[in-house]
Length: 353
Image 1 (cartoon, rainbow, N blue to C red):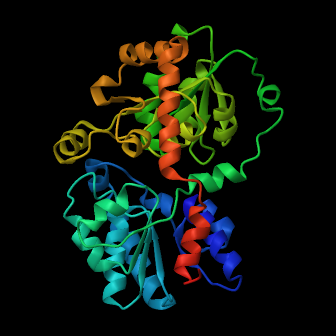
Image 2: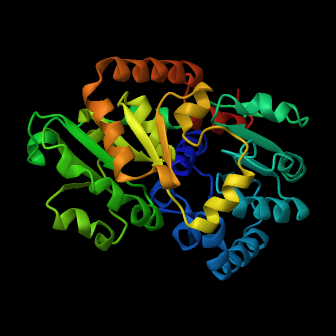
């Protein structure tokens, strides 16, 4: 999504620009000639990456060859640090300028990787307001360009008949956002669904992703729980509270000012490795940006039906608690600012003021 919006902003500056590389449906719709669909290498976790390593190596080989054939005027990397850092090193070695939009979360673990990032990039564009000061400690000048979620939210137009279209009443809606990857949904959804019967006074709705196999949502369908695909912003517009898998969706939920509990679970091995490496006190973006706990995080073993039910009761019934979360969201929004990250980054990339 962020890559696609950046491409659209670049095309507005120069409609004749040729762009190709690895991406998904958003990038392709924006005008990128896809060399490779990113879904082929979209894995998270230490063990999961090892198990999918052959696919990663194959994709890396394809992208390296494409860089040598296409010989771009510059390479734009978007997020996806484990893969893109290798691409950056290869491009730099072959004298292709490297620009990194949404850099790796180096501040979270193995912070010395900042020296590698400095070595293999020409410019870095950050979407998190605390990153430039972090990178300064390593002698790097990083541009804070705002957060691209504002581009999406600003362009979003609510569906006026959303409730009627999906057979929803005026009762409070509890939104379940289990993630955008198959791996995440399989790890999160069952526990989310386990508490539904405890809240008969609310409407529970699962935010589905259309490009995932329907099988990953079968348990929700079997239980008669409402599924709504590819309309997460409409769902958040009407939601009273939410259970959200850690990731970008936690910040989207905050920007829509929906009180939430953040959850995450991964494989035992990945969690044990991560627990020993992670150097930040939180995993959710609202908490990281605020520099304090704004929303409750239930991670690994704490993500249980018991703890989740307890937190949802607070979100639904405890009005002072809800108000405290909303005040925290206001602080997050103030720190982010409202500039267009896509337009700002496009101007910097093209050297336009």
